[in-house]
Figure 1 (cartoon, rainbow, N blue to C red):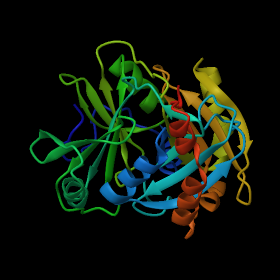
Figure 2: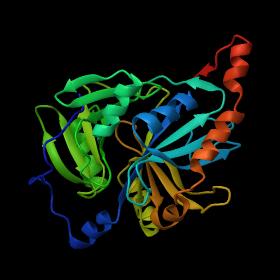
Figure 3: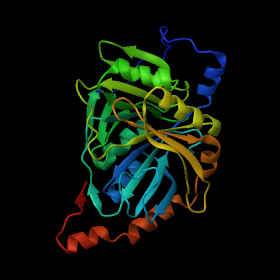
Length: 322
């Protein structure tokens, strides 16, 4: 069960890297995790009122994303970025909403996000949102759709309270070899007995925790995606390395357009268990991801204009389950 971890410490067994490689890895940033949401209104309430995050930007699209950001769907969809602060220095959530799809099937691939926020625990209690204390001072809360969040009942000491994302893996060592050996992450902790490892690109960034699930990883239809940025010049070399090592590339290097905003380049990978990983060029992404002061209004207006829930209710029908 994901929960609090002891203070970070370098893994003395980690292989040393040359100065050039270390500098390249240091330029990478953990950005966000992508969630597919079926109930946009309840989801917005969870992130804004319970977690205390704010809408950083909201975008509507008339057709599916070339990099399948919204999953394997071709219709109208929206993207809402929510977090505790600007994407330049906070790990945030990307909420993708496909019009007409009401729910997605969860697997055992996403095991939770852990954050440190006494305020979030207090908010949940005031809202009478179900909480389960999994260890002393750590509470599990489920976002709409079943996504788990672990809230540490402590005062926020860091700029960004989002501490780690936990993903399920079938073979811990194989996954560590991929994320550390190929993607260059530093190993902060590794616990063979509990079959988990903590990795990251920098001490002050959100970490990635890998937890063995004791079998195959099932991504369901709710499967998400974790995103990182790197200097644009690194993208071709990341793609070339994966080709050389025989690793899976889901989307080769491609440019993505957002109406009225910067065009970014991305390459989408899959780790040994099929977890989707997006690397995006940092320079354009910083321009694209600037906080939009109208983000809340854009989201609220989109939800008000979306009469799909009312239409389905009036016709006594349910939205599609993916």
